[in-house]
Image 1 (tube, one colour):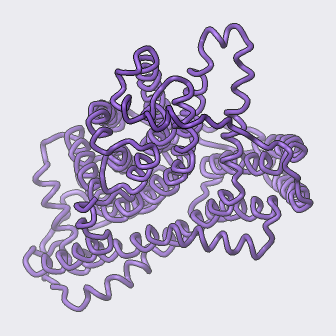
Image 2 (image 1 turned 180 degrees about the vertical axis):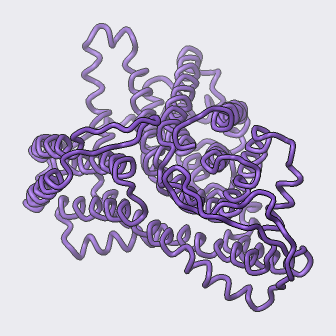
Amino acid sequence: MARLSKIPHTFVIIFSLIIFCGILSWFVPAGEFQYEKREVNGVTRDVIVNDSYREVDSSPQTWQIFGSLLEGFKKQAGIIAFVLIIGGAFQIMNSSKAIDFGILSFLAKTGTLEKRRLLKKIGVNNLVIVFSMLIFSLFGAIFGMSEETLAFVIIFVPLAISMGYDSITGILMVYVAAHIGFSGAIINPFTIGIAQGLSGLQLFSGFEYRLVVWIILTSLIIVITLVYAARVKKNPRLSPMYELDVYWRERESEAVKVDFAQKTPLSAWIMYIMVTAALGIFSYLHPKTTISLGGADITFIAVPVLAILFAVTGFLTLRKSYLFFILNILAFTIIFLVIGVLGYGWYLTEISALFLAMGIISGFSMGAGANGIAKEFIAGAKDILTAALIVGLAGGIIEVLTAGKIMDTILYSLSSTMEGTGKGATVSIMYFIQTCINIFIPSGSAKAALTMPIMAPFSDVIGLSRQATVMAFQFGDGFTNMITPTSAVLIGALGIAKIPYEVWIKWFWKILLFLMIVGLLLLLPTVYMQLNGF
């Protein structure tokens, strides 16, 4: 860990890059492209006009370097606010322990499956692995579950040991599953949302292909886990953790206990009535919804159907526990997010409002009160503040490059250098660059803020889809999180599971290499095939 302490802080790296860009403005020839407004995938944005580059008078940067920080925050204010609201909203929900409760409830129910002959033949343990990994992967794909997995490592590692497996299996079930979902993110606001926002793309566009990618990656890691778990159960000595897992084997197994007798506060019923009424009004105002899916427009009564479903499921879950009601709120938030983006063109403002409403409803449903909700929101915003600050600070890099009139020169030079390499080779190089950056900056939001404002217009120059560029970022950001020593979540998860880092590296690197190759193959259709949103 001594070496890790020598790695510069992300803020230091970004400010160093700002200074470096300022120095470049004194030596790199100034130049500019001509831009034109063009509507692409329903979004109007500035696009570079081909063969329009020309040299202009230089504009060396000195004291403007410090002013660029404020300009960066001004330009990225919308995304910064979006990140803070998302962080605060999810903290309110997490403070209710509803997600923890849902997972523990699922685990408690799996024991009843052993009585069924068919399921017993399949193997209840296999079902636990599959369903657990599906849940964590889905959470990673939808809202970027990462740090939250640490709370479950202490549950799933002993569970894996009790089922005859090892601590590595427990890590695969929780941490790796969530980060595979993170890598194949479907609508993760912290990576996909920020990257697409900075690239000028419709938020969460390209949903259909991302869903396919998530299914493929999740299926592969589940198969890998099942095969490994079966081998270890058959011969425990095949596990690299066989001797080190003595601690877990000697520890008395604790039964998973779930309290279903949670008292539902009156405020939860009030929230149910208010949300149901609001959905009823919204159904009256928007009886039909038209969404674009797979290149086709589909019109149906989405909101009225969802309103009825919420009225029924909300009532049933409240009768059981307010925690199940909060999980129901989360599920409908995700559904309305998809409907809103695809059917109503929601962007940062609407999506921020949706998640903020989710957090407030969750807070009142657990009886937190207005002050309690405010405190949790501030705590959540504080936790994500670093990422929000990085978005603003990284904007300073672009400001210096733009004010120094060398941004377009860099884009022109890169495009000229890579000219003739082909789109497939170019997107592969982007993937490699993002992977290398992730070793030093494991924060997805930081990398998005740092690289996408440059990568997106560069993709315009070479004729590559911006959506493909976002996916190259997505894969480059996700996979190496499971092996980089700069990831505090990885080090924390391994520490809780008592798996030495060097043992993990030695065991996992082949799987990581396989996943990275699969990621590269999944990038190619974004270049050579006509995909909706790409």
